[in-house]
Length: 166
Image (cartoon, rainbow, N blue to C red):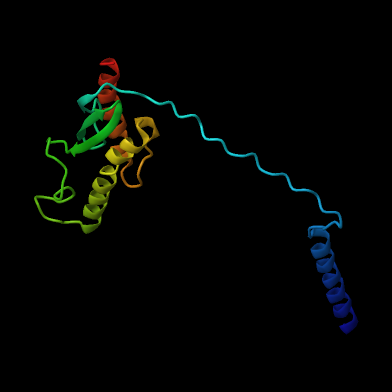
């Protein structure tokens, strides 16, 4: 009985060794030159010149909760120099420090925190537009993606006015 057990154990051990050796990556003595990844090229940014002035627009769409937004964009020297983006709830009330509260009270701290983080994220869109000069180059901010859609819509409307004025 011991001989059979030893033979089975030896066979299993040999099979395991065969699998490990057979499945391992073989190294060759000759080193192959590694291909260099193609250099990333940035897409050409088209410079857009707008007519100087202040342009204002409300979104042409509503958010998931019936709210909307407005934007005011100032153009100086053909470039966007200021941008204010404001969001409103379904009742037309400006979203601010009470956004996420129920009857003026924080009844759900988690939801309030999420709502306030969305406002903080949305507040970055104006500065990002000034940096990029093009609404379609403003990336969404985590936590403020619904506001991003409203921002894109309102900025597009306002900047069409600035282009039409050209």
